[in-house]
Amino acid sequence: MDKLVIRGGRKLGGAVPASGSKNAALPLMAAALLSENGTSDLHRIPDLKDIRTFSALLTRLGAVIDYDGATLSIDAGNMESVQAPYELVKQMRASIYVLGPLLARFGHASVSLPGGCAFGPRPIDLHLMAMEKLGATVTIDKGYIEATVKGGRLNGAHIDFPISSVGATGNALMAAVLADGVTTIGNASIEPEIVALCGFLEAMGADIEGTGTTTLVVRGVRSLGPARFSNIFDRIEAATLLTAGAITGGTVRVTDVEPSHLATVLGKFEEAGCSVVTDTESVTLQSPETLLRTDVIANPYPLFPTDMQAQWIALMTQAKGISEIIDRVYHERFNHIPELNRLGAHIEIRENEATVHGPKRLTGTTVMSTDLRASACLVLAGLVAEGVTEVLRIYHLDRGYERIENKLLALGADIERQSYQEFR
Ligand code: EPZ
Image 1 (cartoon, rainbow, N blue to C red):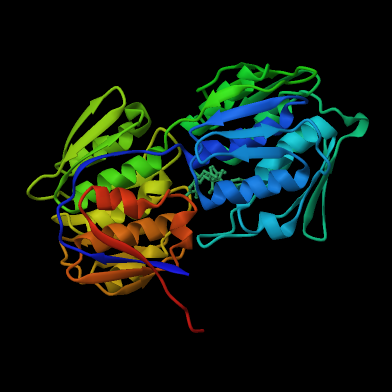
Image 2 (spheres, rainbow, N blue to C red):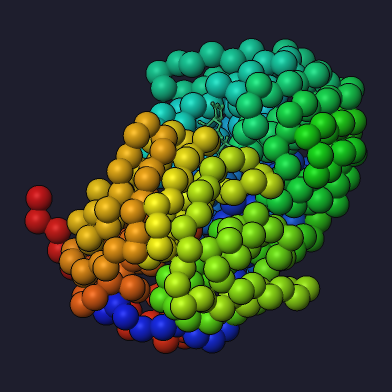
């Protein structure tokens, strides 16, 4: 098992590139299953554990995948199975993304229930509701979602999501593109990852109207073909790297980003006293002498992303004053707080609201990762903590960040990956 050993106190400086988006890559890979022949080429696919896990699942279904660490090619011409087994789905809940494509193309899907995660139950009721609206019969049998559609083809329908769900919007889209008739999706997610998915589906021959809005109209077609598509950049990784600059009092430039995908977060950096300069594909952040407190409410895009909530709390431990951070997307996504407090932070939790008292001097110690963004938050805290911080179980971090220690080293951090044994 690996840990990151960080000696805090260095101001970070320099420029690093963002990688391709994990949360766009996964639905793009799933959508490639819809092509009846030929090979789809997806560019800028990050070399992450979640990508390798999902590749293993798609291969198990019969897709042929070739990946060189940047471009991932998928040939779904000879699929052999419609069952996504528990041992793979339990490693990554986003495996649920195969439900829509398998049902759309083969009229049947058997997908293991994904189970919960470190910050709550993570229901999938909206995914199942969308499939039923499109004419599928969905039952749960021995922990598997068994979805079938009589006659083998879904029918266009009106789907209205009561809450904004990225995954359910993605699954509904990937099911509707091959349905018989027109599907309208109300209260659709408008995250950049969904906009990217629409772009790839259209390149494959899908007919989608309203991309980027909360109302999508999909006219079903008989079949889709392969396409080439360049993935978007990872807006959450980029924001995490900018936070590393802000928390250490440095100046950091992140290249290969789409600044408009980060607008709300950049506004919050400015509210905290940072100076932020953007150009077409980069953001430069310069830290102030004194970080200012801010209040943040995590909400669906384009508001402040829940995937930046933990990192922002780490930053606010160094800000002057009391900051209130609320997460309206995941009410229990606060496992990072006890570990931050062990580093010397003073953070109180009440339901889905964290109150951060700052500035607080942090002192390095050994801390435990519990989930992907919590581990990023602890790395950020380690960069500013006095002495040495050891962040354990960084397999969580490796799910969503492409060897982040290399990028932080390039920015001047004193950070090293070491393997270690855990004794239970
Ligand atoms: C995606 O998860 C991301 N994962 C998450 O990022 C991100 O936090 C989340 O969107 C919100 O932006 C991927 O894209 C792989 P949702 P997803 O459906 O699609 C509730 C990370 O750190 N809900 O938009 O699963 C749900 O409980 C990960 O990279 C239902 O009630 O999120 C949540 O409260 C973590 N029923 C809200 O909707 C459903 O059927 C938003 O969830 C589905 C969701």
